[in-house]
Amino acid sequence: MNIYDIVFYLFAAITLVSAFFVVTTRNIVYSAFNLLFTFFGVAGLYVLLGADFVAVVQIMVYVGGILILILFGVMLTNKITNVQIKTGTLQVIPAVIGVLLLAGVLIFKVFLGTEWKSVKTDIPVKTTAFALGKLLITDYVLIFELLGILLLVVLIGAATIARREK
Amino acid sequence: MYNLLNNLIGNDYLAAVVAALLPLFVFILPYALMAVLAERKVSAFMQDRLGPNRLGGKYGLLQTVADILKLFQKEDIVASEADKKLFNIAPVLVFTGTYAAFAAIPFSGAYIGSDIDLGLFYIVAISSLVVAGILMGGWASNNKYSLIGAMRSAAQIVSYEIPTALVILAMVMVTGSLNLREISEMQTAYIWNWNIFGGAFSGIEKFLLIPFMLISFVIIYISTLAEVNRVPFDIPEAESELVSGFHTEYSGMKFAMFFLSEYANMFAVSAVVTSLFFGGYQSPFGYLGNTLGISWLVPLEQLFWFAAKGLFFVFVQMWLRWTLPRLRVDQLMTVCWKYLIPYAFVNLIIVGLITLL
Image (cartoon, rainbow over all chains, first blue to last red; front, side):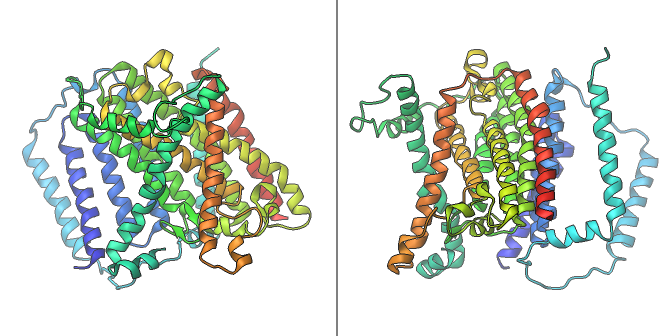
């Protein structure tokens, strides 16, 4: 077990444990803050896979953007911790069938059926940013431009909603 | 630096840990001690007072050490209605976010914590941990002043990240690199190679770039000032309205950690500005070590220049703090969304066109 394995298991443990608390805790603020550690752990796993750009984008977009937005929403809501999150057991048989089907597909088709490529390499020292940038403006330029238009539409929509009617 | 430590210690993991802790113990802690004192002295001189002058000679040099010793002995108070877990994690998270940014900052040609190619992008991203920590501390205190302070702080930091990122994008266009060490290396030799003077270009391009570099510098300096919650952008801890914002309920060492990360953050943003525009660790003229032929002197000189430039911008931040009144919340958002962001966008487009020439 070398240092790479130790770091991998550390990040994997952070991700899994915090993700478990995100779904089990009753306090919605705790869920939001646990989500921070889940995102952080996933970013660490990306780094270990050599995807440095994706890792930094993960922190930038999810921690810096989405998580802060969630926290804002949660904190601006008055007495959010007093809300009773209703949990109970309904419709046992359809639920069991659905879960079993999904788990079966995941385990037998996806997990066991995929040919996992495990080639032992070092973590690349060069950044992947240049290759990703080249791909974005050559092969995937249409998707890139369409996403830009989509984001512009979202921005204009948000500004229209935020602006008060005169 | 890492190789030197590795030879010295003999164990590569231990050497990595020591190399990672070096900036904290060699630079940030002594710097924060002196910066707190400097802030009090600067404010005193600007207001025609004496400032701390009892301990450590005429200039009160040991005042902060005494303050830290006092904070160590203070009782660790957690309000009974506060959320204890989050309340205790928040200062650690804020300090982690601040200190993590130092990993990609080149202190000299021989020392950079992590020489990654995405350094600048990483610094922008990891600073968001600070926002999460501030929100956590403000909410866990269970106090309306703290919560309002935290919300204001987060809204401000998130807004001002946009002009910062736009200017950084323009600088990436000019230099073609996200690695702060490489950007510093490009501004080597003499003062006119610094990016603020048009960078290492030659001919007409350089003269076309100079005015836009100045605009970029002003935009990024204003917005980083807002990101570290300093006056005139300190409405998150506006004393006259919010006691002291998100850290109202904190005492003892946890308060000291917020304080330390505030000062460390001030230096971090100054260091980024320095590396982007003012040559980073490069000397404005040649090195004494090169002239005398002593090669080990050059990295030390570089460390001196880096610290001197960074501390100068920290001093300017203090200078502004004791000169300007604070902005109102609506003025703060107007400055960001109606002025800085459009200017930064126009600047980005023009700089892009010039670099295409």
